[in-house]
Structure formats: structure tokens, C-alpha cells
Amino acid sequence: MSTSYDFDVIVVGAGPAGGMAAGTAAAMGLRTVLIEEHPEIGAPTHCSGKLQLHAFREFNLPQRLVLNTLQAGAFYAPNGAVARVRRAVPDSHVVDRAVFDRWLAHQAQERGAELLLDTRLRAAERVNGAVRVTGERSGRAFSATAALIVDAEGARPVLPKALGFQLRRRLILGLQYQMTDVDLEEPDCPEVYLGTAAAPGFFAWLMPIGDRRARVGICVDPQLAGRAPLHYLESLLQGHPVVSRRLRYARIERKLAGPIPVLASRSPTAVDGMILVGDAAGHVKATSGGGIYFSLIAARLAAESAAAYVGGDRDALIRYDRRWRRRFGRELRATTMARLALNRMTDADLNAIVATIAADERLRATIERLGDTAYQSRLLAPFMTHALRPGHLATLARPMLKIIRYGLRALWDDEIPAEENGAGEMNP
Ligand SMILES: Cc1cc2nc3c(=O)[nH]c(=O)nc-3n(C[C@H](O)[C@H](O)[C@H](O)COP(=O)(O)OP(=O)(O)OC[C@H]3O[C@@H](n4cnc5c(N)ncnc54)[C@H](O)[C@@H]3O)c2cc1C
Image (cartoon, rainbow, N blue to C red; front, top):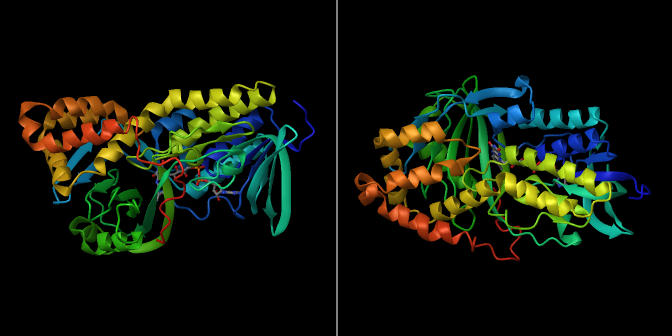
């Protein structure tokens, strides 16, 4: 390919997807620029920072990024009943996202990528077999050309439309407070609070991050929630019997908010001149909203495809789409099915599921053995098998029917119309 453009690859957005894509591309010898709209990387932060140990092993991430380690989970039903599980080995670490994102960007620079901060891109176009981006850098007009754009803009990307992408996604809205002096029951056990009143279309959580500190938050689906996210978070803090007890002496250190693109994975993620990674591509589990690990995997695959594309292999971009789907597409499909079924569950259904897990030692043992927050689909078949045992059938018949009816329907209809993009506009 011609080298008459400024860079081989322009990576847009210095979150986990962009940092990893830029670092990998630069290490492969591509002339790479990583462009971030904010004057500093990682601010403002929106994320809880839970990242599976798989990611630490696969990407050789240093232990000094770890704030806390999680090995257990507690699931509170709307009626206050709780099911607890504890794995034999830890599942995840918690990282400080600002520190994590800066570390990735620094690695990318060490490998030869150029980093441009305070540079907001607003448009992209194809020009003479290359692509050009335009925007502003520190208040002045900016433009650059490259063979390829790796778009890692996050949940609300602005560049893909101009190059022909038609994104389908449903945005849910997250709001959380980082708090200190929290009365934690177990420092390695995140707590999940379920219920249509607590967090319509998702859940509320308390994530211990070490030293009696925790991130306490909610996510809501604006299509199912009647009020703004702040209403649900304040109600959780003041009114939830468990949360209000844990936070009796707690103080807010900072507030974090952001959207999560769930139910977005079906859209194509590559066109001539651009590939999407991370939240921009919908690489998020629809059950938990977790996206960091899959973003890192996709970013590495994207950079490898970019190298092949710049080397003249025009099929490399389509292969990228196939490769990430082979690697974790099943998880996105399974969690989409679970989310659509969960969105139809009443509080009585959720009470029944939590009560069954709490009461059934064998089921809990299965969850503890096979449960993996990165690869959640591993639990689907064993859970259904347990649920269909005669002892549980009466209690779980209704939720199971919903999983079959709404979950399986998701295989061909994920309830997102083709034109829907940016749904969920709502102030925190
Ligand atoms: C409340 C909440 C809690 C979460 N908790 C977790 C969790 O515990 N674990 C987990 O795995 N996931 C979690 N997630 C999801 C996780 O944050 C995302 O999946 C992850 O950040 C995706 O990384 P990304 O690099 O694709 O996008 P982002 O992290 O959003 O990064 C995108 C970057 O691009 C920049 N940018 C955007 N547009 C432009 C532009 N036009 N020009 C220049 N720069 C631009 C942005 O400033 C940003 O720095 C959470 C999300 C929310 C909202």
C-alpha cells in the first residue's frame, strides 16, 4: 500500500480498546497514532474497573494495577433473600481505570505510537484509497490521513456513520459513587441487588475496591425506567435495607457516570477503511455490562488485522469480524439472551431464582465450580438442567418459560430496530 498518508493506523479513543490496539499496532511496526479528546487519559472515569484474571494472564498485566481481588458474589433478591457463592480461586481484580488506561497508553508510546491528547475528532471520510479524520486539537482545526481507522470511541461513536456503518445498540445508563468507610461484610465479595424497583432493566451493585472503600452504583434501561438514574441510586443508598446499613458511616469520594451499549453485538464491525473495537463495537456482556476484557481481546485482533490490511490484504478486515466473533461471540449471544429474558422477569420471578440458588447446595457448588464472569455461557446449560429437576420445577416454571420464550427469541430478534442508535438519552 502507498505510504503517502500521515499514518498507517489512526486509533481513535484512548480507553482500554484504543490503548491496546495502538500498542499492538505499533509493536507490529505500523506507524500508529492514538488520539484522545480529553487533555488527560482516563478522566472522567465512569467504570467500576472489575477485570477478570484471564485478562491479567493473557495480556501480562502487572499486579501493581490491582486495587482489590474478588472471589465471591452475593445476589440479593427484591424480597431481601440472599444467595452467596464463593469460588475456590479468585475470579477478578479491580483496577483504577484512569491508572489502567494511562498504563496502556504509555505502553503504546513505548512501542512507538504517537499520542495526541486534547484532540477531538468529529468526522471521517474516504479519500483516494485512504481515510481522513478531521476535528480540533487544543482549539485548532486538525486533520490526519491513514490507511485505516481503528475506532475505539466508546459507547457513543460519532465517526462510523460517515463510513457507512449503521449501528444498532441499546444504551443503558450507569451512575455510581465511590465511597469510603463502608461496612463491608466480605472485602472480596461484590454484592448485586436485583429488582424492578432497585434498577429497572439491570441491577444495582456494591463493589469493594480495597481499604473499606467501594463503588456503589446502579444501571437502568431508560426504556424500562420511569425515573432518571439519580433517583434509583439515591433510593438505593437511603432505602435499601442492606445498602443503607453498609453505608451508615460512608462518605462519597467521587461520582462516576456513563452509558453502556448492551444488545449491540450483531452489527458488522468492519467496513473498508475502518474497524470498530470495544464499546464502539458492542463488545459488552449484556448481563453484567462488563466490556474491558473483550475490548482488549478485540483490540489485539484489530491491530493484527490492521497490519495485514496495510500490507495489502483487503480481506483482513472481514476476517477481524469473524475472528472476534469466534473468540467471544457466543458470550455476547448468551448474555443477550439472558438479558432479554431478565428484562421480562417480575420481582416474584427474581425472588424464585435467588431462593432456589440459596437453597440448593448442589446448584451453588456447580456455580462455584463453573462460574466465570468472563465466560458466563458455561453456566447456562447446567443451570437449566438443575432448574428442570422436579424439586425446583414448581418454583422456577415461570422464569424458565421466560428464558425459553424471550431468551431464545433473541437468537433471531434482539428487539433493536436497525435504525436505533443512541437510544437512552437521559440525564443522570
Ligand atoms: C457505570 C459503569 C461501570 C462499568 N463497570 C465495568 C466493570 O466493572 N468491568 C468491565 O469490564 N466493564 C465495565 N464497564 C464497561 C467498560 O467501562 C467499557 O466496556 C470499557 O470502558 C470499553 O472500553 P473502550 O476503550 O471501548 O471505551 P472507553 O473506555 O469509553 O474509551 C473511549 C475513549 O475514546 C475517547 N473518545 C471518544 N470519542 C472520541 C473522539 N471523537 N475523538 C477523540 N477521542 C474520543 C473517550 O474520551 C475515551 O477516552 C462499566 C461501564 C459503566 C458505564
